[in-house]
Image (cartoon, rainbow, N blue to C red):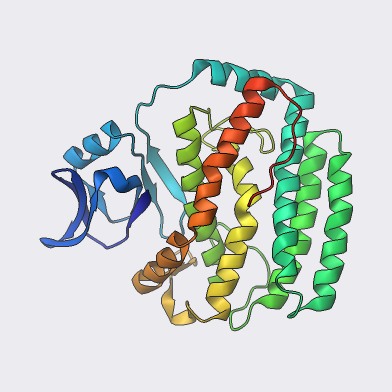
Length: 315
């Protein structure tokens, strides 16, 4: 199963028998059997025909609308038979402060586990920093494990992530990365990180929707209007994988500074060629993509059973 990313200006997604096709100026840019499509993501100036939209939704395939930065501006989800019992259990779990705290801990501890795996990969480049950061993470793991409320857990997660970015800053070669900037991204590395996170968030949203979760009810991230809090909870676990992918792209010069452009609001985003390169690299992360539905299944089992929460360890 694959996600179709449409980033050509003026491109149109259409139905062609039992296939989904992307056309521009009468030329077929891509044609994929419907059965192979997991989701469709459209960048700003791409379009989808009404016939294709109906076909996609009837086939259970969501359509995402995205900015060049990767920010998701809207989602059209198929009308899937939702599990009302799952949602009732999810609401009860959110109101149960003890269970909510356990789930919040599990997201953060799984993220820290992932960070430690990727820290080990960079010991030859920044040994002392990796050693110090690994020890700091051990301390944060202990503190998160004994935290008593979600706000304390969020604070510890933020502090540990800031330390983790210290390592990233030391490891990037050829592109500056002074600090994390999001809305908008102010440099090339931040642009790649933001785009990677949002592309992965779309994968998470799809897996949650298929299972029937209310994605607005998160356990680590607070509830806010129009925010996919549960999707962001799960995204935390997988952010280190995107960090490592971006680091590899930059240091191997798979993506270079000429692959970027500036927007009117000062954001740095990929141009068409750069986006094509990044999408190619992103879609190669199949092991990561396969892990997400398994994580959602794990969360579903915890919510429905009310069993003790044991942090998930991504493969």
